[in-house]
Length: 137
Image 1 (cartoon, helix red, strand yellow):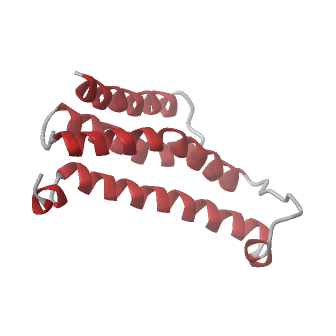
Image 2 (cartoon, rainbow, N blue to C red):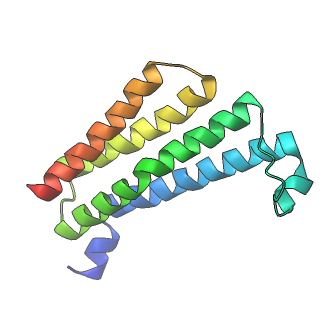
């Protein structure tokens, strides 16, 4: 595979966007926790085991943890599809489905919206299943 061709792969672009979403999750969690616990807590070693108790900071932390549960699978499948050369097929559609669902999931979680949030999580899982199906078959 030619270096220029792989660098412009839509799957690699989507992978880069997913890293931006990961960084956003981590940053949001950090900002909300720091707002609640203070900058000394954030800058310190956090040995005391203090955790944010506010709803928004807690939800951001749980949403971030939830994102990180499926993220390694997405990265592995995206790289497999990029290597296999599926630039515009079902694999890319599955990847976009996962990514968009994960974008939608975060504000739903922060707002505390049940059921719809779970459905959106399942949509993201379907995206991963589509990607895996393309890799396997």
